[in-house]
Length: 242
Ligand SMILES: C[S@@+](CC[C@H](N)C(=O)[O-])C[C@H]1O[C@@H](n2cnc3c(N)ncnc32)[C@H](O)[C@@H]1O
View 1 (tube, helix red, strand yellow):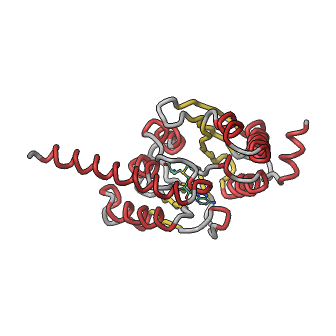
View 2 (view 1 turned 90 degrees about the vertical axis):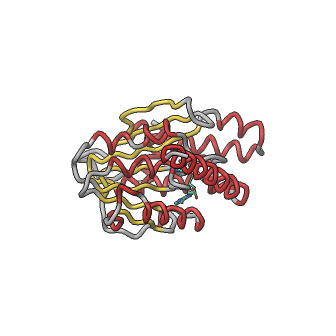
């Protein structure tokens, strides 16, 4: 057996194991896990575009809701040598899998302290760092509208003026929810989409659809304005009724 075969086999075995891990955690808590499979490479690439666009510049990057690390693995090779990455993950098993990924990633050999894994909720992240890019994998449509506002406002607060937030939303979930859940569940889902639409109207710089993901997803990029103060929940709600 040659080296290529063994390393290729290792990658496949690792992906398989992560797929199973994700499925088990989804069965345990689908609301927080928010999906039954990790993101595809195509989705990971689009989410990490804002980091790649900065080239060799030193950046502070935050990844929220990293799961088994499918986006993290795409992100790490694009970090320039003086860039730093904070990873926040609520699930205990995912957080320890992410620590293992950081310890063993060949691109971080001898400098894994540039990447920190925080096992906490992103809305409770205690940091005095401001970020150039935030990549969010959170399953917003599983949360309440108020929870989503809290997280989005925290993201805007954590971004440097001019910084970029990239997040994704699965396509078609509103219809799936209308068919499979209670009226209250469908109403909550619509309300979350309206909250997100308020932020999109004010801050979006682009939206792309990734068909090569299960399910297909829209990637949104939002930019914190250079000179405007961070919005309050009231500003966003007022924007929604205009
Ligand atoms: C849809 S999965 C995305 C995982 C990974 N980014 C990917 O794309 O494959 C959402 C992840 O967010 C985590 N999560 C959910 N709520 C969170 C919160 N408030 N703070 C941090 N992580 C959270 C879940 O545990 C899960 O790993």
